[in-house]
Length: 515
Image (cartoon, rainbow, N blue to C red; front, top):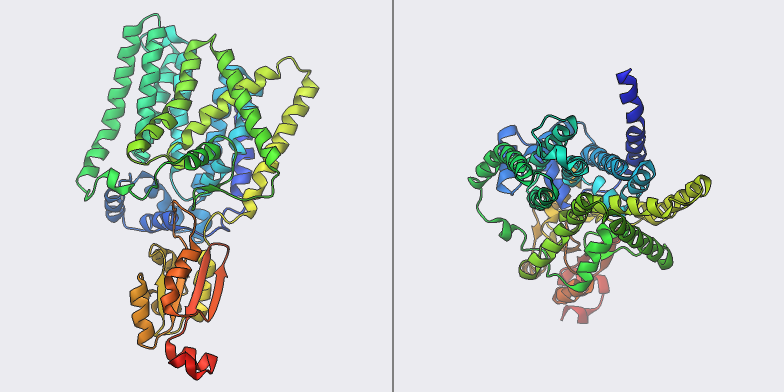
């Protein structure tokens, strides 16, 4: 029966989804929120009209936050607000399997799913209460549609009578429109897809009809998305370029960080834009990187005999990072989260290439090799669960709640920590900590002169382009005197206590200290 065939066909994608979801649920609620996720919680907790206005004001579509709103009411937001991202991250892995299987068979699909499913960066975004894995999944639906069109160009360029062509155009149109209605990051995808569409039209037996179908699809996408972007314009008080001014200049180390994080299985430190220091032997990481690069190159060679698919996958992989690298010469914008979805075509190509390399190997040996590769990827990913990827503002909040007394002053290196501290501070401690927070050393110095203790707190609330610069912060505060106490919350946040001169004299019991 038809339903039995559909059920049988769905077994492998369903199994891939479940297996990909498991690592995304591990420790999902244990890491504290950082600034971006606190904004998600705040926005999802607003009334409908305020949620929409706040989203548009900050250059975001309200879609994702409307979806989060019911989860915000469930309690334990560190877990529940991240559940959708975990599910969409697993869905992206399933879609990569489905796309690759359609191109090169089940083995290639499994390998591609392993590459994306065990990517530390894809895992990290799957455990963050932001919309990036949802965006990635929607773009993959659109890419699935384009792949179906590339596999049958005569049907793609004909009136939409065949099921394959109708499914392909529908997936491309609705996936692209939905991606744009979730995040403006979908704009580069639309440009990428149209470049692919023009190339496919040139390869098509009926280029004009293919271009006409593409224009119709783009018209539907525009109709489904333009009203929201027009509405967003009415809420703007600054341009998009001004909103990304915090991104540091692109350097070779930063470029390697972006590429290594998204494509080559390195564990990223999203705060400092460097790789995490882990115990994994360097030769293991380098072996994985080399194997992935070789597999992708082999796929490129194999697909040259299938020019439509070659164009679809290579353009979807290369255009986005190349575009953002060129733009970054003028205005830095290259970040892992902005090129995240291009990790999917990289995984697809790696699966196709690896499958081709294993095509002449006996089935049992082939299974052993794939299993060994999966084990290596697991070993490479495992340290992610043990490193501090998010600043421990939850620990810092507990320390400040215990130590800060009424009348003390809190000097914050990053005032973006205020909404995070508000989330984690007990209600009884919020007044003492938050109402006394200042952002300049001169304000802290004035508090000391007035006889108040000062707690200097160093730590980043979100992403920062350089190193943490703790020692620069410490040196800058030397005019506050000699600290009486230094505490560390996790590995990233330092809390330093400075006594006013009178208390410092009593602590040292030395008359000279008062002079």
